[in-house]
Length: 138
Image (cartoon, rainbow, N blue to C red; front, side, top):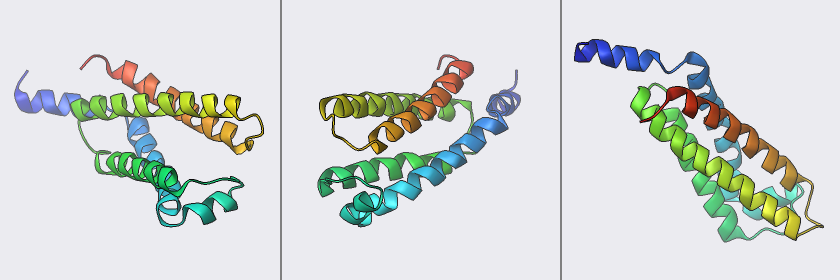
């Protein structure tokens, strides 16, 4: 297959649905990232999180912003870029789930919202894992 035809074929293997998931991911990440970076104590109080460490909150905000913006910037990329981005997203989502669950189990009086965050990260983790497996080996 000619290089141009192969590139077109690989680009087409990334479905419109996956590209749409990347846009949704960008929007959700930025929605949470900006207030975590700018006003973590205010945002934490607004969503019912009783104790906020501003340094940790801002690091989470920075990670969400970086991954979310990369979703936006890479939404029109080809197959190889999607494989790499999905690998990162799978690692990020499932490690976040693990961290949240360990925290929620070790802090029994933690806010219910922690479990909601775990569920959101697990849902994204499932989506990213599905698409990463669908796109096959790098």
